[in-house]
Length: 256
Image 1: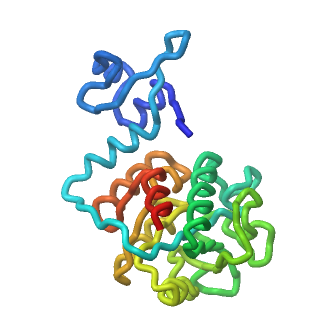
Image 2: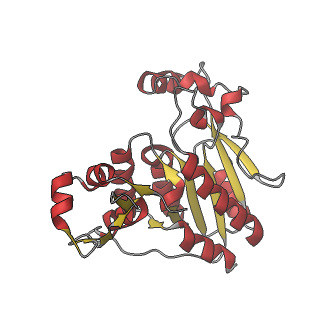
């Protein structure tokens, strides 16, 4: 799905003023950025959000490409009610990202690849969790066995999918994630879900340490702050993982 944004939103993402964005426009393109300008019937400028995100990633300095392996798995991080319900203190506005995640889930199921849902949870009798709660307000919404920890009902899970439960940002810590990957001889992990600056980044950093190729789908991860999201995606791409469009990852899964 194409997401168009206003000139104000586009300027904010690019870190420039709306006046500069207008000045750089020539022949329906933002010169120096390679971003197209679209017009509504009323003459209002619109920009594709995906083009702006891709521009940001393309300016990634020394980053190389890891590439895909032969045996992928899909990890879906925290697509749970506490993160997606508007009533939760931990929620983000991630409706579009959830649609993209479901596209990846469908493709992974068709390819016969393992799909792993991770659920964050909170236990008050852990000293580590007690310290964690001082940094993240509202973490009590993740109490184990509560509705907050349950999978968002929109997710296209099937009975054969794996579900693991994680207390901290690392989904590998005290869970079965590495065991599942090793048992299935997986050499590639597609890391989707929430949030980019938290578990997504931590898991990507740890995955490469196990000799598994980390792949982060550009439109299927999210954060509560767009600038934090963008900066972390760029840094993930520079250092530890390939950040790729969802369409490219689906094409790869369809080839399996």
